[in-house]
Structures are given as structure tokens and as C-alpha cells.
Length: 582
Image (cartoon, rainbow, N blue to C red):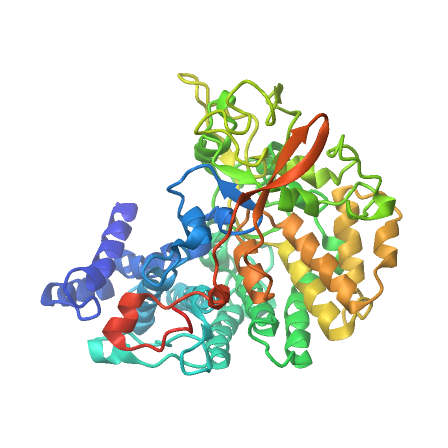
């Protein structure tokens, strides 16, 4: 009955936005539903749940075909269309506008009524704790939704100003009130940070049962604390999740696309926001030794909160509950393994992986051999990519010059680049017709490796490669630890040659590309760094035993596509200033 009522609550909240021509002006029946929401806790919590459901980061977007990291063999793929000239303000696969504002409006309504709902009137302490927790969650969710809106839709407006988003911190009853102007980028970021800081102050660092109540909640009975903030709430937005999104926002604000004057104080703020999170886990010593393999069976099994020690792997700050699926494998296994081979990593990405000795493949010291290009490479390449001659599911995969459907050009499901996706997939999934199986998968929302890389980027810009601020570890220390974990030969001779801020910046960006590939970062990283967007996507060619590369797909991004658009329909309806070029 509880889940049924929650669904009804979500539906009632949704109807406030979908039941009439003006989605922000509820009809009379919706006002009746609001009375029900205030009187029935499960209905009220549905507003909060709906806000959670609108967070874009709840699943991997697999938007890599819109970047230099991959292409798709599916002509209808939205990101393939984007990259080849199909991105517009009324056709945007990276649109976060509608979902995030629906979520924000539901959160705003929730914040209006949360104190009036009879959560647990028979126990005043429990009642107050529930109000505190859900109010904190609501501020956190709203801050997270603002983050995605800012990242996806901020930009240089047609008025020449760096603009953020319209800010709505109360529920809107009138269509006219929705015509609020876009605020400045700085004001938008600060609004989101304010929400996230409120959440951090009100919520525990992490949800979970405790033997001793944290000092932040002193005076609250342990039994009540564990009921309200305990293990059953572990995958809700916690204080540390809010801090992680604040850290993301600080890095975004410091990045070249938004920090036009290269203000060092913004880089220092980003370094501190990320450094504070890392200080809590002991700095470099807190780097999870298996964090770069979080999707493999052993790590997924260890992350099962229903068995074993019932604790998460140390890599995770926030993730979805484990999903028992085979969708990713069905979409991306090579065709002879009954997959559709959709995501094809590019030669551009493969070339970004150094040799095992740490040197880029272009360096004379690397030992790279174009007749045996995958030998002695950074072990992360084998974790992320199936290449010509790889063994997967005890089967040798021939992607070049072969006779089966796995090789380039042999079928609609063949790779276009000579590579198939391996990262995030479970080898123990079976897609054989009539014998399909599923396995549990982790969908990471925020993990500590990202925070380490955020810190390295910001610390290098603020303090140089070896500056430590007040944290006792530098950008170099972080990159050294990440590369050592990856399996780069020690001592790391190449890292020792990287002494300037500029060279360290290049290395940090490359390490981020490798560590976070296929997790939804590259599309926006390229834009916040002002990277060239139109490098052709390349694939591998094998001729007389020698490997080389060939252009597979030309990209058709215009310079203004450094920033995403405001939806065309919203500009027409509400007169928002559009970003330049759109």
C-alpha cells in the first residue's frame, strides 16, 4: 500500500504540470489533490520522489558518439545526429530543461507544505527529524537539478553577457511568473551552492545505522536517528553528496569557458571544495585500489547492500541501487556474441592511452609499435575497449579484415572504428538467443575518482603541479596515485618529466578522459575546456600487418556549440534570452 500511495503522490504532483494547457497553473482537481498531499505523508513524499526522478545523472547517457571518444553504428542515434549537424535548439539530446524544472517545481511545492504534513505527530522528536531530513533532501535535490541546468544551458547570451538560468525558488502559480529573466552565470551558480550548503548542514554525511549519534544530531535518540537517517535511506542524497555537487559546480565555474579572466580565486575555491571531500577520506590514502574497476563482478558483489558486510565500496559517493539488467550488453556486445555493437570507441580515444611505461605513444621513449599497437599498453585500455584480437567471453574478436560480422563493414551491427565498448559491461551476461541472462550493474552518479581528478585540475591551476594548499597533497600526488593504481610501471618516469603547469594540465585532462570515459563527462569537459569540437572521429585500419588510422566520421559542430541552447519553445513562450548562435 505504501508504494501505491507514493505512486499516487507522484502522479498527483505530475498532474499539476501536465493536466492543462498551462502546466504551471493547476486546475481545480489539482488543488483538491494538493489538500490530499498535505494530509497524507505518502502523497507529500511523492513530490520529493518526483524531484529525485528528474535528476539527469540517474543513468548513463552514453552520449560518447557526440564526442571524440566514440561513434555509433546506429544512424538514428541522437548523439551521432548531433555530432554530424543535427543539433539545434528544438532538437537537443542533451536537453535538461523540462525535466529539471518539473523537478524543481515539485520540490518547491514540497518545501511549502513539508512543515504542515502529519509525518509522525504521535512522536514529536520523530516528526521533527523527518521534517529536517526531507527538507534537507529537498534543498539538495533542487541544487542538483540546478547544477544540470547550469551545465547544459548556461552560455553567452545574444546580449553578450555570460548567463545562467532562470531561478525559481518558490512554486509558481501564474504563467506570468515563469517569465523571470535568466540570471547571470555567477548568480545561478551561487543559488545552487546555497541550496547544496543547506542540504549539507541538515543531513548526515552518509546515511546508515550508527552506534553513536553524530554530534550534528546530538540530543536525538539513537533509535529515532537510525529510523530516520539509517541504513534504509543509504542511497538518498546525503550531506557528502551535496558537497560533491558543490565541488562540481565550483570546478565548472573556474573552467575556461566560464572563467574568462582566469580568476585564480575561482580555481582555489574549486580546489578547496574538492580537497575538503578528499581530506575526509585521508587524502591520497583514501583512493580505492579497485575504484577504476567498479563495474566488474567482484566490485559489484562487494557493493551489494543486501548481503555480505552490507557496506558500499569505498569508491562510491552516490549511486543507483544495483540494476539486474542485460540492456547494455545487448546494445554493445559484438554481433557474434548476440549484441548490436552500438558504441564504437574511436582511434582518438585509443591513442590517448599511454604505454605501460607511462609515456604517450607519440614519445620516442614509449616503445610503441604500429605492427603490435596493443602490446604493453596502459592496462586501462584493456578494461575499456575491445580491439582487434581481444579475447572476450573466451572468444577471440577480430574487428579488422575478418570474415564474420565483428569486422568493420560486414553488417549493420559491425564496428565502424575497429573497436567495441567493454567498460561498464559484464562479461558474465549471456545474450545468446533463448539463453539470455542478466547480471547486476552499478550506475555511478558521483564517485571519488572524479573528485580526485577535480582536485588535481583545480590545484594545478591554483597552486601549480606541486602546490598542496592546506591539504598536504598536490596535483602531481593525485595523478601519481591514479596512474600507479592503473598499472603504470613504477617509478613513473614520464610523470617526472612533467614540471610545468601547462604540461600537467594536459596530463590531468588526459587522465580524466581515460578514467571517466563512457560515464558522461567528455561531452561537457570538452566544452568547459574550450577544446576543438570538430576533430574527425578516427578508426583503425590494418594493411600488410601495419596499423594506421582513417577518418570515420566528420564532425559538424559550430563554434557557438561550446554552450548548449535554451529550448526554442521556451524562448518563444517566455522570451528568454537565447545563447549566441542558437
